[in-house]
Length: 184
Length: 184
Image (tube, rainbow over all chains, first blue to last red; front, top):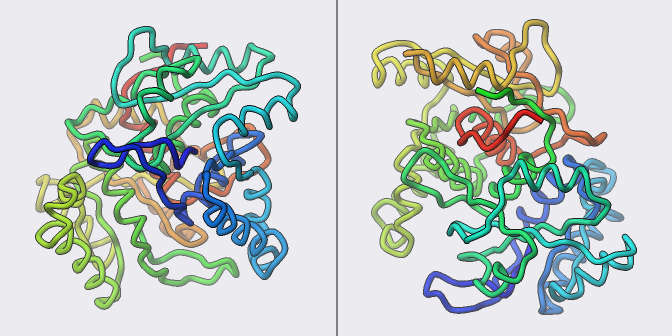
């Protein structure tokens, strides 16, 4: 989850603040769907320190005995300063650089389906790094430099403004959830 | 979304507090997936008033011009005191009582698949009311009295502690999202 480089509502490139519930919800979803690492990307040390305080509370402080499930979920979380550092950490952990996957509300030429990315993740040896933006979304530059661009979530309504928390849950379920469907 | 009757971690039946982000996230997911109404169930008038204050801020106050997408999302939200009142409101709005659907982490005899409920919602004339619990989940009584009990979300990991926000996003995507899959 990238807090920068993302757009604000005026299309300016900014760094957003950390949201406590994002950290918990996305760690819990990541842990549930068997994701190895949830990288929270923020360049500012004060914001990084805030997340480290949270982790300490739930990993070693009162929270660790009050609610051990949170301790477990936060074990997949790692704070990094930028996307390059996340990539480097994957190399250290997995022995090879990741393929990056991104979603965007716009449709890009050559964008791939959920079923294709799901099949590739299952088939390939390579690690995959799925990118999510906060604020008004990842910059065009980050999206275009990803290895794979996923189709947008395409609801039947005229409205598509999900929170990053909801988008992560839905997309990880499509990419890594159990096969609950049958061809209609 | 029911704030009561739900369990706390000691298996006692309680009423949980309203969480600001639940209201926003779930309204946005509901609006995105074409849900007609998101009923927030809370028996206490002080908690109901809190939600009405939020609605006013985003529907008529500063929020309505600062972020009109939230105004739009919150148009599907309605606060009721109990499940019976939600049912009654469906009768008033749709001319017939709803079929209730529920999920639970436990597997119940006769529980139905996502594809079956998805097909029924598409096929039937009847309105469907999907129930979600806060806290440590809906009481056994509420689950067993529902018309349909959905299979649990069954991740490939040994961990399944999603927030209600994440569970709503995933389940509405399975029941009402576009058909993105192909038989594996």
